[in-house]
Every structure is written in C-alpha cells, then in structure tokens.
Length: 125
Image (cartoon, rainbow, N blue to C red; front, side):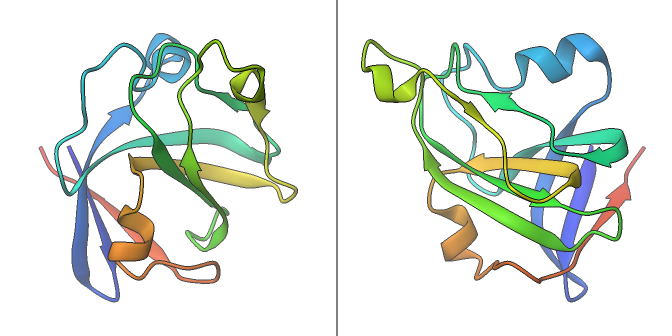
C-alpha cells in the first residue's frame, strides 16, 4: 500500500497499479472504492497517457500529477463506460503527467485538492 499525503497530512491509502495488467484493468469491474482509498498509477516518463472508463461501475475523480508530484489536472466525476456514447472516450489531459490517482467522485473537492497542490507518496511494507 502507498500512503498519499498533502502538506504532511494523510489523504488516501492507495493500491498501486504496479504492472501492465493492473494498469490496464485499473478499477474496472469493481463494485466500489472504499472511502479515503485510491489507486495509484506511475509511469516511466511524463507523457499524455490515456485513461478509459471501460468496465467501471461508479464515477471517479482522476488526479494527474507531474514527476514532482504536483497536480496538473483533475478530471472530475468521470462517468463509467455505458450505452451513452458520451462515455465512449479516453481521458487525456492537455498536460504531460507521470502519476495518476483514481479516487471516488467528489473526493478531490472533499479533500480540498486542486491543480498546483503537491502530493507525496510513501510506500508501506
């Protein structure tokens, strides 16, 4: 597990998508994400990586962070893939990022996380 902090204060406990299969699956096909929990994606370089909502069963916020841990974009209330064609898209921020954190929809606002904030990741054994 990874502890995610803002200003030295814990905001989330995160499961790490630490291999290709986990990165592809993400939170797909899960029933829910417990409160204050997240999924962390880290990539080898900063890039405009794409995310999709296929197989998702609930809306989420996705925070995109640069290599220094600064939030460069927050995709709020990303809707699950459904029969509605507006959900048939990939999510790809305008800015390059190295990390993404998926959380329950509304949690970025609840935790007062905004673009420009710095988040820190600490691994727990």
